[in-house]
Length: 81
Image (cartoon, rainbow, N blue to C red; front, side, top):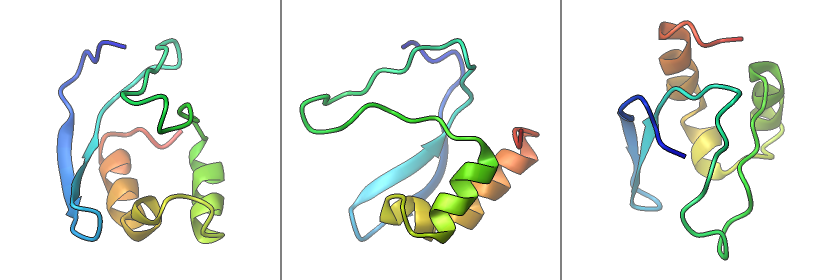
């Protein structure tokens, strides 16, 4: 997948020593991951589903910990659909 927007830095998760970025993608884009032998394929959720999974602690610890920051970044872009 080629990103047509530049990823924007959001925050750093010091527990795992990695940065979290946001970017815009469309439903038509086919996502690829860097290390398929180490990771499963990406899953796209509607915001309501994502919120429910985060509240139930069924996402990665970083997504749960930085839920508010991720939500705020998306809502500022008008991407809350």
